Image 1 (cartoon, rainbow, N blue to C red):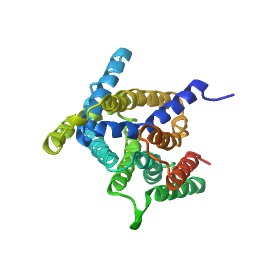
Image 2: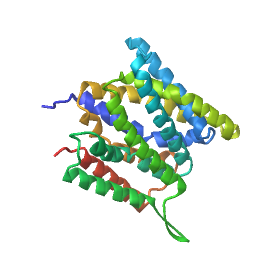
Image 3: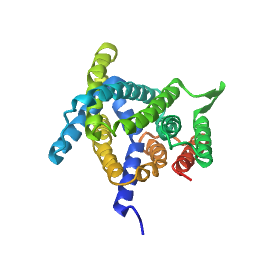
Image 4: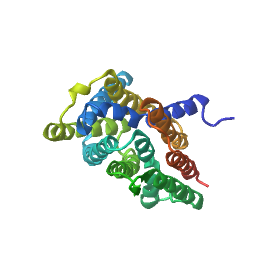
Length: 291
């Protein structure tokens, strides 16, 4: 018999598949709204989605006095990580964006080894990290008339964002023992909004001439589906079942993202990208195993 209901497994599969589409949706939104504007609009939608759901479920969203400092600390990390992510997405292909941002669980495993007692890397999980990072290296290798290059600026910014996201996941896991998870999520989004607004007004120009329905779809997908319902569903799974129910399906995100980039953006999946995706996915499976 399954220790976890089939519907929980199906929900986890759906969530990770949808998360894989986030870089592709971001690429659509970035056509009109540069990185800071995209982040601002995305999290306005995400906040509204979470607030409506929490009001319906009776969750109190105003933090306790002791929760403000942790929220501010995670809010700073969140703001920087998301802005880097959007800048990276804007300067690389959808395929590379999908693969590289999906490496955040690999960095989370490294930070967990360093920061959380009892969550050290085993030989098998270390082998998984080696395979996955080798897949990342294959993704970064680019062949052109000028010879080989190792990643664009956008690729490296995506990888930096994935590193910060992995660290943020570990910090958030620790903070959720002291701060109510829904308050932590919604207030880190709220904290980021004025910074995104200031950065956007000071440095960015909206390209209204490129506006289309696909841009609207991209923003709604990022805000409502991923930042809103995706987060709430994942939090519900983690709180109701063991965390491995979510972690065990991390490998789906890069696969989903690469396929969606090919279908929706018309990008071709080269041998290096396909091989890199497979290696990252295999590595993710291995690092979820505890023995």
